[in-house]
Length: 329
Image (cartoon, rainbow, N blue to C red; front, side, top):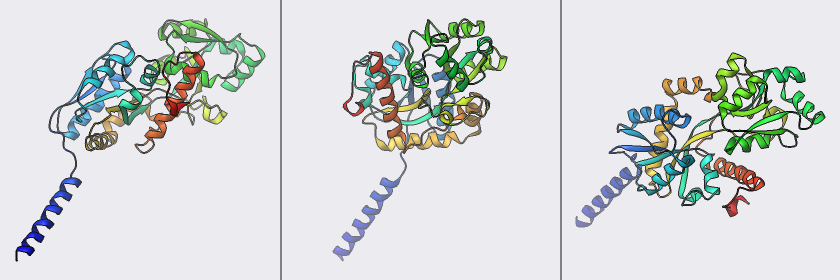
């Protein structure tokens, strides 16, 4: 009888443990998502609608905390100082990879943070001066490339002083073309130069210059993506032209290394549920973020590694690489 009771107790305990192991992680208090950039910017505008949806799904407050400064580094440092208990996450972009390899972070970002889900993956496009393209007699990227080959250093491209990811993707897309690089201090200055015909080309995220394209002041001439964009069906893309340049701005959730996997899984599950909402679908459509699929959770490790590698190689060529990783060489 005693043995039977012990056996029954053992079975009950085993079932209880199994039930606990299979139960979903439950957040019990406020979650903070750190945004390393200011209120109203592209990053902030992306995470806030997602945070509202997550709050409804998870049943606890989800607060966006802006910790701006130092091109995102201040937000990284702040997040790094928080406990890895599953209640602090961070919005990040691949620009933080470049900060890491510029030795501006106090830690090795590549190993101390984990990308857990990409929210949006925008498409960079090369825009052109309408008046100058008409002057050159070109209507698409193939014609422009041929014109540049026949007229080296005649066609100019606006370059910002801090090129970052845009500079890396531009270098990939225009490899081998002899363009005249013209420095500008900011995006608005480049756009004004394009409209006035003082500059021929510039690179930008689609959402940033959609208004200028719609007004006809500048024209989109090359999309750095796999397929043509639905909103600009006449614009050629790197995929169809065999140009190895697909890098575009993306925004993702990151967790500090050591965060309980159960908390990460619960957050990712909530994000995936939020994606299906009408609110989120409307948001990404209005911002043209629906033109490119984001990598799945299973694809993330390979995706992150390839992004790191592409940026590492660009920084090495530019002479700005100060921190290297063996697995990127």
